[in-house]
Image 1: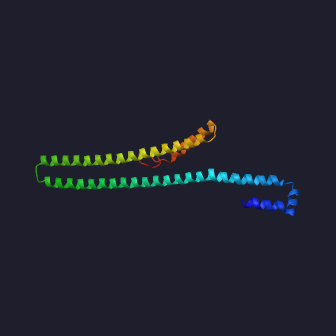
Image 2: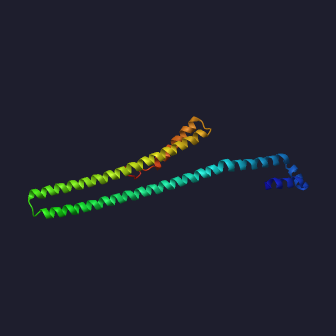
Image 3: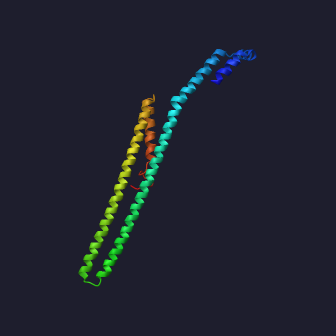
Amino acid sequence: MNFVFITAEVVQHPSLADTIDTFGINKYDLIAQAICFLILAYVLNRFVFRPVIKMSDERRREAEEASANAEKIRKELKETEDARAEILHKAREHAEKIISETKAGADLLREQEKIRTEQLAVHILEKAHEDAMLSHRKMKIELKNEIADMIVRLTAILTEKNLNSEDRERLLNSAIKAISAEAPGNGAGAPK
């Protein structure tokens, strides 16, 4: 708005007005262009830049939350693995104790106890493995849902844009490739 007042002062000042006429500038066109520029700057700021910045901040927040959730899942998986190792350690200790006690007994009794202990250890391993797999599947499902949500949002944005079908397809394919490259579980070191 200050620009309009400065322009009005320039128009009223006779020596500057002569200078403007010397360069062949139409002062009314200059004032109209300045007003149009200010209106355009306001509209762009209000309806384009602010929503884009807001959307960028929301996506950054969502990415941070996803990262925190992934870290939490990693910690829980490590705790599960540690608990599994502790259970295995205890199971092995228990098996060794039983074996040492049964050595004094009959060979048949010793073999029966050994088989029972091994079955218990296998069952504990299977249970721990099932728990780890369930946690891994849950994490994969959540990741797939997030990727699907991102693709849906991207598709919605692309459909709002006035692009031809070739540009839409090219942008959609490049976004899907970028999302696939960033997603864990695509051979980038994530467990499968």
